[in-house]
Length: 260
Image (cartoon, rainbow, N blue to C red):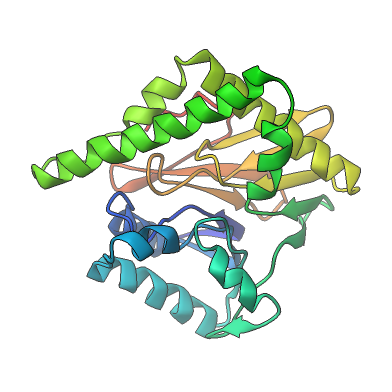
């Protein structure tokens, strides 16, 4: 039975990258529906495609399905991220009926105003400061690269994807502190601009929590966690986790409570 939501936020599909879980995302789209869908950046990994052209059939099917949803009357909006940043040159235009924008202002059914951004705009703020902050960002990026490399080897050997980085990030203190700093900076940005909360992606860590009275919601990714953020009909937010061919719902209070 199809689950109906008011809004779905999804990011970091990384289509064009071997580690993208495109087939799982297609199955997810068959299970849920929404009046509005935000594509919150890094949908197509253009950076990866420039170095190694790869676009399996399932990746193309994802794009075709999103266009089909827009054609059917669903309000689909696209906010490019850092991995698909060339698409930012199209801000203000439509791609097959899908408007491209740098950010969006979303009003929930219960009257909350949410700033919707990919999240890479926070990189400069998060990395600025002490040497510890810089080391934390470096550690985080290194862990992500290790995950990609290990799974490329596993894919070559015919083995399934396994999230190495999820386990490592929870144990490396500097990387964990980077995540927490990112969340705090995101909440501060929303507060400074007069929003009740912020929805973003970018760091591949699904989470919903309140920081100093500001809603911080990260929709996660479709490389490691296979998650999306949903707004229910009453305006409340919920994380959706595609696991074992079904949607597992719930909210998170910490960024390290959802295993891959």
